[in-house]
Amino acid sequence: MLETGTKAPDFTLPDQNGKQVSLGSYAGKKVVLYFYPKDNTPGCSKQAAAYSQLAEGFAAKGAAILAVSKDSVASHKRFEEAKNLSVTLLSDPELRAIKAWDVWHEKKMAGKAYMGVVRTTYLIDENGIIVFSNDKVKAAEDAAFMLEKL
Image (cartoon, rainbow, N blue to C red):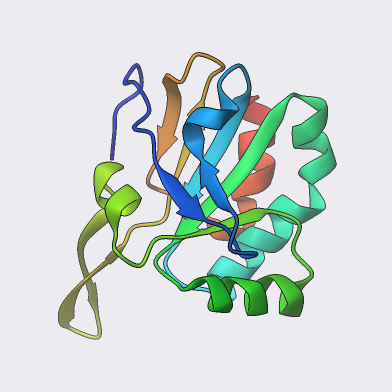
């Protein structure tokens, strides 16, 4: 996980509609950037739905919401449509942003080790500086927690 006070690493990734989105294009605006493991899984669905439900609150505080996973653009589109999401879902199958943001780590499930995305949320200020980071995210509560942080 990147530390607070660090300059946010820029990236350009396709969203669920195939449009290229650059973090740098949000200069002058706050950004809530969260990384999640997989589309259409229970925790990830709760997290994305909560951000979608609170999207107007984030917009009122001048913050954009960007969500990144290694899933494909097509998977993101299906996720958006199935869950009626309003957040921007970014596809990073080559793990460029995921690794740059230090959220690709060894995980364990049922006694087996594997590499995967650690659910992590960052708050980036208008100057592109990370002002808050959390890798102990509770998926269903993350959106409300981050809205309070703003």
